[in-house]
Image 1 (cartoon, one colour):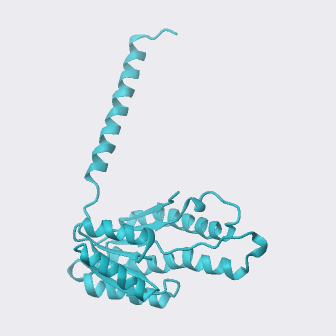
Image 2 (image 1 turned 60 degrees about the vertical axis):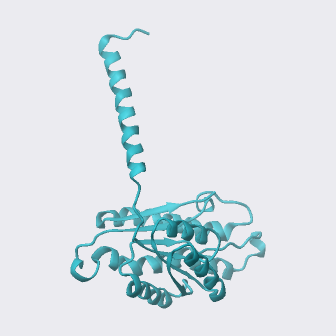
Length: 225
């Protein structure tokens, strides 16, 4: 195959453009997102992945609110985070109860101000063949993996869209992180109810990302595994 000078120039230009784009992406990643002073709410923040994220956020200087249903477990998590130098508000909340979620978000706002980042992390799984699953199992997982993140999202949206105080109506900023699962993209045997609820969360999160971008709100879907 023969290349003339024009073809070689186009190839060189394409390579240069590719390296330029890679450099821009690298610089953007290195800039990251400054968490110092940011108000972060994590649901299911008392153990597991939620507690790991909470520790990292505290180290990064965020002002943190965590919630869970188990009060004793929540107190242990708060103590752990405070010992690490964190400013932490721990709230008992059933995130499948919309009224409790709205009250919790209001409490965070009263303590820290408007929420900058919401991490919808609360979750569980139910494993078993379809013939052993009751309809209530499906409902329970949909309540926790779909409705709970939706309740929390709707509760924080006014703060992210409008802000508060002198900045009211001008904020248009915020981040929502939905912790889904590889089970929200690929179905596994004996996990039909879990995967169905996580598929619902993945779809919800992707839709919110498109809808809320024009309001300056970033929505991120995380699928561990």
